Image (tube, rainbow, N blue to C red; front, side, top):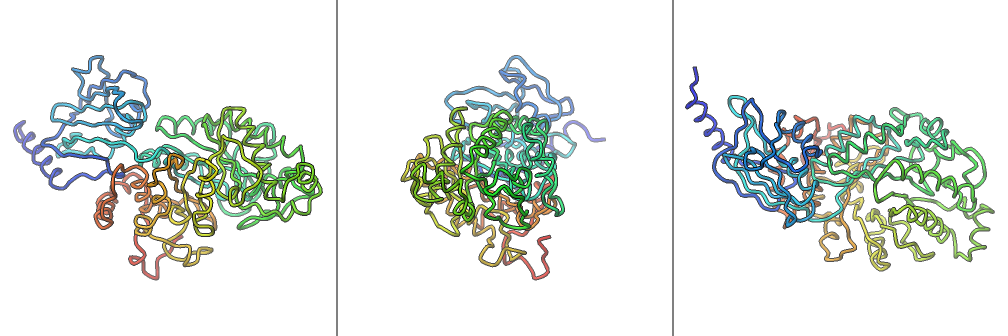
Length: 521
């Protein structure tokens, strides 16, 4: 029979093993100092003090770290204490673990949430089933304000449970925005009560596997709440005027020639929303009214990318609009169209995000509530970034090299060799990371994306994200110089099993590790 002294000895031995082995947190804290000993939680659970006993970070603590807690009204008596400290930076926290207790300080609920996410990676199970925390002092805060992950649910539909999985992943990696691409040529995914055909027809426009479906307003509200509890703001994207084939399939009168459109299997077509028709503009404003009600986000993404003007150049309504307004051309018409939508959002206290396509050329002035998302580094290098800054527009950096995680490590379907990259490329050569190091307050932060081109089904997503998304999370969050790549790669290998145990599958990290038999499917 094991006596009490033996149990204590085993715990101390285990703590020593933890210290020697070293814990790994990704993304890396700003400052971390290991100290001697462990804080141990027995079967009875832990007493917790927090000024707000209903705070969502306490539910996260119970769900992911300590199953049983008992609230305590005196912080001096608590095992685990959350203390407000206005001196902490926004979203930052300090974590102090001793053999006697755990003390966390933060200025806001975001900081407390991220401290729990750190504990989630720090907790261990002891030799007798105890919950153990290696003693440590951590000081942490984000490097940049905007840290986002985008999931394309337009080309391929994912279940609400899958959306939750990646919201949780984003929060775990200390991102604060979930950019949700909800409309596409292949499918319209968000229920709009005023226009039921958008989901009755548009959500089922494509015929491929996992390309049918939509999210009801009730499902969306539940996902918004789920995200908010993890300090994630969902930013919906309603793409306009391009990538509109599913909407035009539902309501052909919104296009230039009032005729049904073909749904592309891949890519996009010139069948875009008509900018010359008042009924089309009103339709989109009505859609945005419902979107603003569903999503409390201060930001609504309006797309604006890849909108071929072939139809606009021949459409009498569009050409009349250009002539009546004295616009230069169809690009100028898109800027005018974008300004109308942004002004509508402005009237609701919202900001509009547009892809960098809208600033490739100067023209009709955009209002002061817009943000530019720089993406097409492959095609235009930093043109959108520099033009946006020249016009004093805030910028989110999310270049296709190297933050588009749908780009595989080796060629696959429509992705030729020039559209591939591995973990080292991301870590060493990411133009978005380099841009966010500029001392320009207009550069708000960085995003990464998983587009579902070429039929990226749900089971394929993890292997495209992991482990490369860990490098991007490190670049977004870590407040200090990046460590040597080889050292970071070792940390990923150390943490791989931990992520896999939580349901995130890993693909290959480095191109040199892939043999000719590897299948991205």
